[in-house]
Image (cartoon, rainbow, N blue to C red; front, side, top):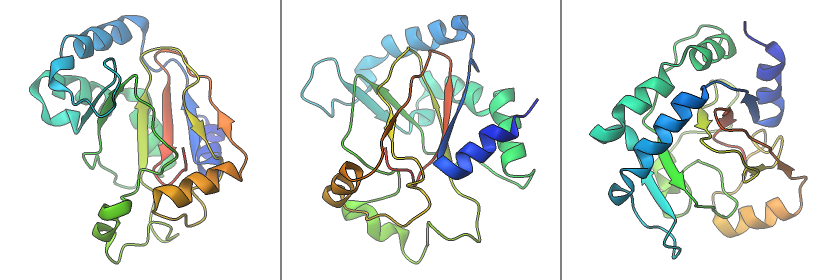
Length: 189
């Protein structure tokens, strides 16, 4: 059954946590899949244990995992209810990150890529927001977010975002393996 408080929290804070969406067996299977394909991932940090793969749904080893996440009943029911059964679809924004943290950012195109937004106003209230489902495969407290930051236009410049984050209230989320964070891509995290 859908919990409207979660949807309200997403609207207000820019995120909500769907608890225990994936069972321990699925989490273990996904972790093993990722660990067995680390060589396919980029090294975007100096640390030897840090990996990243953007657009993982495009890789044959991971397309089944992407389908399982995108078609998960709890996630689909949440999205159907949140979007009030309006049509919605995946836009190909998928990432796998292993031991990789980033500076404060939004998932909007920024820096040299901001020009691709063209005439799109990501803060327009006339369209539904773009959401991301983040599946966690281990317990942790690595996700920090600025609640409500998705409601006001933020700069698309990394340095300006860093300054903005230092002046706002930061929430550090405690996530368990199998939880899914639903996040507005405009949220500063």
